[in-house]
Length: 297
Image (tube, rainbow, N blue to C red):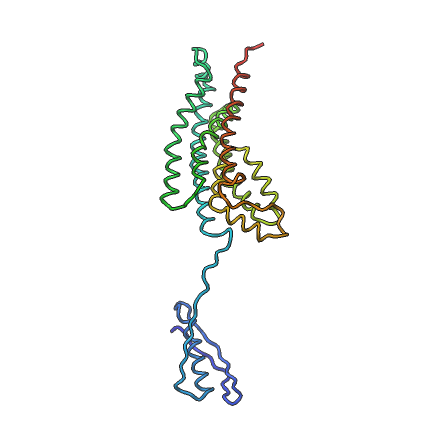
């Protein structure tokens, strides 16, 4: 039984009809059909027309596409989280062997044998760069296979090794054990890619926090791994973010954003910063190695 009625007033003279409809919602049609049966019966009685028939059509409203919470948001979050897990693991493996070679004395033994530090780091960079290529191209292939249509984010993935490897080499010199280096590298990069980037995007889309989000977006660009997450958000949701700024009106605290993906303030900046990271951290690495290898006084 999918429905029933309780009629507690049916006064044709006063044209008062009151009833309660009980519906078993295990039937998706019951909620629409049983009230219809009663309305039709009431009209027949009130109009004294037993042949009266009328039809109603119930159509749901189209699915609302709320800015900032569309399918693009979920796909971007999925890409960023997967990137954070996989790429953080790869970088933790890279930093591990560097620390082991340094703490075990194997690196020093090579230097004593006549190896130049520039050759050591260049060889490591070439090998690590090549080892990361299958992962990066697999990521870009997934973009195409799932029709994510990222117009520009793929370029920051291609430049990712250039930006992050010198930075990882520098941080490897700060640890005394490979376990601490692995744990820190994995946690730090995972946090930057998966968590910090999400908070920054949320701030940039919240009227009261727009300016704070814009400032944090610039500050965290000093971390090489932030660029891939930033580019994915801009590529997938840059237009949405721009519309949110327009809708915030006077309540918003930030400036209007350019919806163009390749705009200087968007992915183009991430590309430039990635190249800058390669130069900057390479110089820092050279200076640190020169300082550590200085003759004892």
